[in-house]
Each structure stands twice: as structure tokens, then as C-alpha cells.
Length: 111
Image 1 (spheres, rainbow, N blue to C red):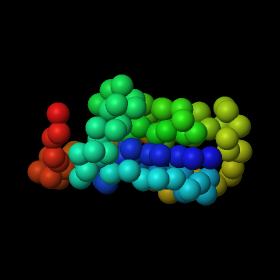
Image 2: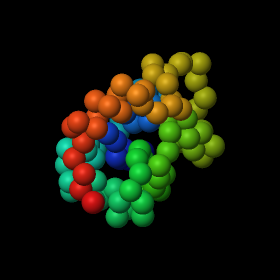
Image 3: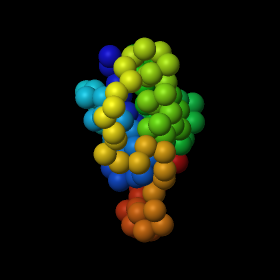
């Protein structure tokens, strides 16, 4: 499986996607959309929208998804098997107010 995950370096939703990948032992490309303008533009072009996370699995783009939604997609398409392992981070929640405030001072707006 080839997985490209368009993620923010620090974000509840993005960390949820990473947690699902670790839970299932999947290799994936963690693509920083905050610090690299070209990565963000590629995500928007491929997904047709500006929200993240976006995860591309074998050419199928899952746009603006949580880790839980990514896991459900992979399970329902037999890309991974159910496991008793638990994720090491929340897979279905955004950032705390503190995280949002911290990112607001560092976020680079491209569009």
C-alpha cells in the first residue's frame, strides 16, 4: 500500500491519522502542509479542497478526514485487518484551544 498523508506538524486531526498508521504498523509518507507551500498546493490540487488532513491511499484521496475515518476506510476495503491494539492518540478529535493558539502564531497562510 502506498500512503501519502498531507498533515500539519502539530494538530489533533493530523495526530489521529498518525496514530492509526502506528496502530496498524503502516509505512506512510508524512507530508508537511504548513511549512512547505508546494505540499499544501499539491494537497489542494489533488483533493479539490483546502482542508486537512487528507490521506491518499493507493491513489484514492480521502479529503478532510479524521484518523477514525481513515481507519474505517481501510477496514471496510480490507486494506488492514481488525486489531486489538489501541491507538496511542485520539483518532477523532481536533486540537485543543491551546494548540490552536500556538499554531496561530506560527501558521503560514498560502492562499
